[in-house]
Image (tube, rainbow, N blue to C red):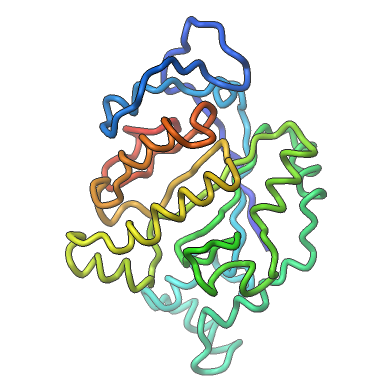
Length: 272
């Protein structure tokens, strides 16, 4: 089970008068510094300004219970929503854990080439896959998500890589990735939260390495950040990450980002 969300891109800055390649933006020798004035001055990649419709996919361990939404684990064991607790009592044994859903996330019917063809035939110009939602389960063999990724448990496949290759090699679509900054029950995150976010164990050991890993490995042309709202961009080191993304990453000329980089950043920064 997976869900599709159609989104529309819109222009957030004035188009440059400089003639540019339709697939990339013109980037002079400017070096973006880790502050919003500098980062927000980066031109919008032209391809995104012209890509009017995209497809957003939520797919992960939460697809196994097929109940509610991708927020299943939190609704069940974070806020103890009665609908979810009753569902689990009716259908699973006492003591069943969310992690026990993972072996059944086999993706046995997943045909990336078929998906790519469907996406292209829909008329969409780009596709964004949920690489990791708030449950922390990674759809790629992440070195920073030990035993909690699609290669180690579940399908034993690199789901991000397979879909990326099918799209890039067989269509003209742009490929993007959603990535959640926070993880509901990650001990490192909870430790930082308990310190009122004065420590950065989670950011330094999980968030930064993981985001650099997916950008360097899969070269997405959209990076859709989420899970930022419990604290500000200084904890997440978002400005520093975006400076790296725009200056040094392999997709620095074409990458598009959204606006969820810390509490209060929504509708203020990013490309969409």
